[in-house]
Image 1 (cartoon, one colour):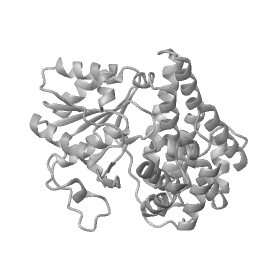
Image 2 (cartoon, rainbow, N blue to C red; image 1 turned 90 degrees about the horizontal axis):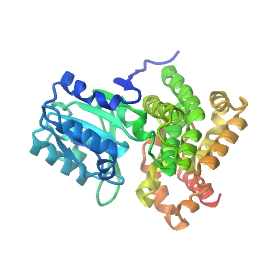
Image 3 (cartoon, one colour; image 1 turned 45 degrees about the vertical axis):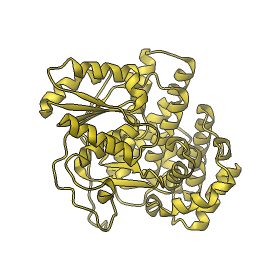
Image 4 (cartoon, rainbow, N blue to C red; image 1 turned 30 degrees about the horizontal axis):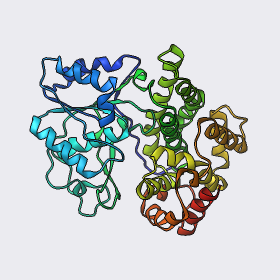
Length: 390
């Protein structure tokens, strides 16, 4: 008999080309009069950012823009965003961008009416302050298909000095409305498309492997893997070819956006050793999170295979392989090669000199605690060494 468990599923999602144009009606429905657009420096200068900023300016509202986000977000960026929120006397946030923008927007919303420092509210902090004050509503509009942070109740940010990642969690951090507009992702470069796509794949796969009872998340995981198998390679090929907003391209991007969102829904079940490795690689080597996941997946999935043979068979069926665990691994290797994911950490600029720090950070990361196979310091060393030497 399974012990008592809990299921949580996310918010209102509006999906389809042009859905970003619905922002005004959602601002009205949420009672937002002074929205703060939170985005990163690059997106702010691209057509989606300029179009949304112009749209907000033309509304009978008082809007402002905060675009001080870049790279892997750090606490100082959040502090600047909170200052912008308070200076504008904002009452809601429109978050536009990738996972960094989504995470920073959520923490700005949290800290807008909570005293102290960001780390006072870190999940797992034994002295964690209660999250009990109002959190302004967020409308989330992702421009990448990878993190799925738009439907997440958590946000990740790094300390400025140590680059240690801190996780903040609360159900009210979940955006009130999500607008999934595939037209916004059509212009993503091939390398970004590939790396973010592998992030989504890692969320779906790792969540499915977690050894706990959550059949709803398992179903979402398998369906999401199927969507990736039908769309990620096409998206990368379209990006490499410079294909514009053709119906086929938009359809493929829409499937990837949906799969990305589904990955974040599924991993409420948990993640695993892949993400502990990826978090360490981002911290120590500043490696893109999705790229780190993509490089590590064959090694971490291989590590888990002894305990998950039947699950890999089900994953094989989901992606259209031959139904064997070997078939899934062949599919994964083929996909990685076709979309340009490096075969080893060495090819991504990681060297043996990073090994000890990588192991230390990975051990401290909580994701591996839910891995289906316990992970020791020696296991992390073997995994990183295998990925370096491949």
